Structures are given as structure tokens and as C-alpha cells.
Image (cartoon, rainbow, N blue to C red):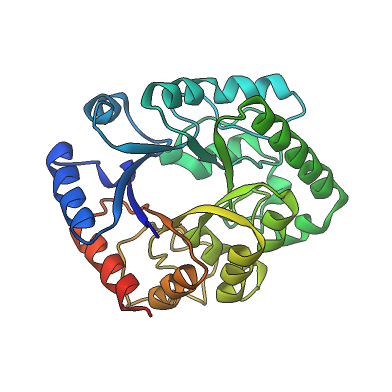
Length: 301
């Protein structure tokens, strides 16, 4: 059984990118894993031009080089297609077959594709009524409303339509950090959409703290009841007693055993459920993160 370890382009924000890729690839392949790169939606044109001609398999965290996020909750399907168009062109150029994206925002307003100011662009586009007091997260009570269910049905329908429009691609929905207006937060939400999933462990950790479900059971539930194509993996440093203000809640940090999120248990659950595609989505992810993951993965029998 092949297992792929990708590096997100979040790992490439400084230094000699090509030299780093070569070092990381050599280590990953020396242990018998397949190497890949995932374009993050924050990728710059300079980074893209640096890596686009590499002989490597790419996946794409959409949207790339687009002004706005893709919002499947929008009533205008043409605007959804337009939001995916640049990503489709990049996929064609790279011969990439898999894309994933956050696609459930409870608004009809356009949301600027600005990952470095994600909280601000959500506040600008999404009604503040969804906000939990003065925090940066969503009030969970809105996930029980008729308004939410209507949005959810629209998302499900539009995801089906988008996948039908691009049948040669595997298009995945990613579970959301529980920010204001983000509608795809829990295992039940992913199961309901009945489509390919790209599971983000750090987002699920934050969501479990807000929505009060057991993180490890939720992880297991998604692995067993959803079509998990791949996983974003990193350590979320947010503590079990998070006040929903500080820290940020979605830290994308280096792998560590010093925080409440039990990385050994996370990797054990993923391996037990035969997940074979992992993206190290860590700010400045490096050889130490690769070594941590491989050593932990291989220690599990």
C-alpha cells in the first residue's frame, strides 16, 4: 500500500524553496513514501513559477489566483463556476487531478480570497449576528436553525453540480475552522454532504472545543463514514480550555507532544483507518516535521 506525504506550499515562505523541496523529497522517498506538493490558496505567483515545472504530483487547495473564495452556499451557480475557473486552469497546467476547498459560508456576499486576513474578510462579508459574543468564532446555536439547514442543502446541491461539471477531477470539501459563518464544522456536517472530503485535523480540533464533541471520536467517525481522500495534518496548539479569543485557534504549528492535541493518537487513528494521503500543512514545515510524522507513523503497528 502506497502512502503519500505532501508538503503544502505553506512550508515554503522563506529560504531556497527548490533546495528545501529536494531535501524533503529525498527523506520522504528514502523511507518508501511517495512525495507530493499541495498548492495552498495563499500561494504567490513567484512561488508558483518556482515550482510549477517540477516533476512531482500536485494537488490544489482552491481557490488559487482568484479574487474570491468559492462559496457553494451562494444561490448563483455561475458565480461558483467563475470562482473555480482559475483553479481549473492551474490544475490543467499542472496535470493535477485533485482539488479541495472550504465551500460553506453563510452569506451571499463575495468573500475576498485573502488567507492572511481570513478573520477580517469573513467579518466584512458575513453578518455579525453569527458571531459568538465578541469572539472570532461562530455561535453554535445557528447550526441548529432552519437558515443553516437551507444553506446546507444549497451547498450539497451545488457540490454535486460542480463535481458533475468537472468529472475528471476529484473535488473535495474541507471541514472548516469554526469561524463566523463557516458551516462545515462537525462530523455530522461532513457526513450529510456525502461527497469526497479532505479532513483538516487542526480545524476539527478547534471545532470540537466549540461544539463540544469528542475530537478523537469525531476523527474516527469521519474516517469510517466519509470518503476521506486526504488529510491536512499539523499540531493545533489551542488548549482544551480555549476562551475562543486567544490564541488564534488555528495555529498550523510544528508537530509537538507539548500540547493538548495528542498527535500520536491522531496519527494512530488515521493509520488504523487506512488513510494514505497526508499533507503537512504547517507554517514553515520542515525536515523535523517530516521526521516526526514518519517516525510516529512507522512506530504504529
